[in-house]
Length: 529
Figure 1 (cartoon, helix red, strand yellow):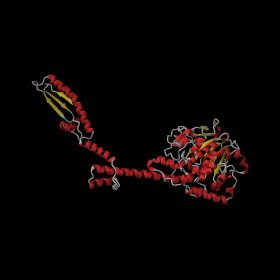
Figure 2 (cartoon, rainbow, N blue to C red; figure 1 turned 30 degrees about the vertical axis):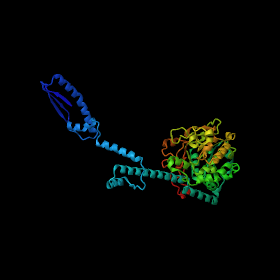
Figure 3 (cartoon, one colour; figure 1 turned 180 degrees about the vertical axis):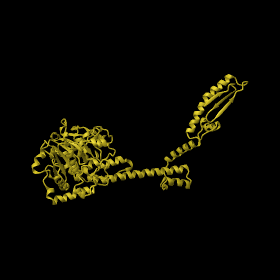
Figure 4 (cartoon, rainbow, N blue to C red; figure 1 turned 120 degrees about the vertical axis):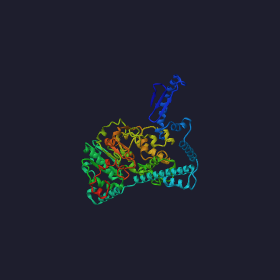
């Protein structure tokens, strides 16, 4: 913008890129003082007009090439008026608020897509209220469909996680058949000259309880391959009666020397009788308990009042493995291995990536259980477990004896000082709380064997560094891969086990690298590589 005053002071010219304004001064009617004031006012006014013009242009208003046009555009704003588009939006908001409180008529025919909705509007001449009502009904229907699909997906995933893959079932059957027909598959494990080492406390003893032959092979292979002293490793593999022949065949035919492997079935332990574990017999035979774990998981569930995340957690807690004797065996380790002082107990869904021999040098400070705590860590989803996560604190016994903010710890990789354990009443406490929960119809807790262990080991747990045991690979798809590579033990706890098709593809290679795909039995069962 430019301001020019003629030499005779008789005219003033104001020009911008689009407009030109010329003011003539009559010396007989306008004094110089009035002229000065006029110039001063224009100097302040015109920049403001220019800025407002620019803002209107940036807002998408058609370009104005004259002061008259600009006045027509800005006039309503200065006068506080609202243009038609703003009034339309305001009216539409009002209609939407009215419709949101109305009942949707029964039998209202809904379009299948937005395109069909637009077509119906055009053909049926919908008013704004009818359009809003149909739109609301469509959105609510889509929300219900999505919710139902999510619950169906969770149910399918639960069934997939609870079932035995065809390849693993095939492997068990073929190895069992091999046990009956091949004397080498029935050879003694370990060989007679190595039997004394099974109770030698100078060795590093691992205990693994499982009925999954493929998973057991990965745990043992990964431990041996990652060890700096494999000749010091002794594995005690415990399985059930139906899997014993196949499990024995696998380790008899696939040596992991110089490490030692012992395979025993639960029925081969003299101490492990029903007289010594009456609570577990009650758990397995109680009709209500069996129906809870093996029955219809949808019946009685009010899906409209729960979230998919909470429903998934309840499904996981109803896995049949939680009433399996194998899953409770860890509470009887001092009695099952009376000559051992210290063992490391492993779950079958773990992979060992680092030498674990330093675990035997960790000072437990007189405690029984060395475990990783799960209430603190970088991953808030996995490492945020406190007692309130597992227990029903509305139950008087729970609220009276437990603190909801107490930190939980993890099963899966635990150092157990059996010599100290034998001086405690941990097993009796475990049984006592199992009985109480059974009597309360499972109203104290739902999730498997960890809750009673959290109570039984209360005051007997020594926290170890979290790098020893990384959890969540079976339900946390966003697991940090760099942290996975650094962890000593990675744990696929959760439904998405690496041997299942629902396992996470980017986390599966950490497990499959220890599967021997050249093995004839694995090849013949077409176990997916």
